[in-house]
Length: 115
Image (cartoon, rainbow, N blue to C red):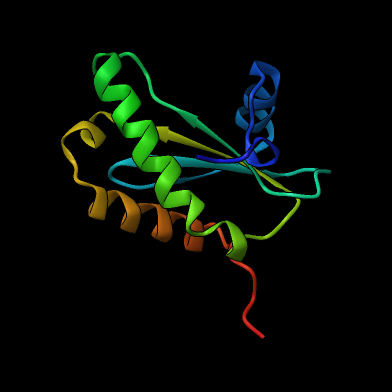
């Protein structure tokens, strides 16, 4: 579970990231990101009704939360990130989803530089 300080919760926060942010797309997910004034990275997860029923959507959100939480310490601060699930996410397994998230975060250059 993502702690409260790492979550985007309000609709206006999501809309700001969609409107101002940049986009990186993969086969399973679309990653929107933009700089912010927050001290931590803030992450939001969006899964449409088109992806599946409530059970499927919640399963996808749990998997995304788990995969992202492993990278929280390595992410740059002062960013808002929204992960939007595509329809193909419903049929994917956790391993491919975790790899996709890692690839999208590295494409967006959101990992801290190794020193």
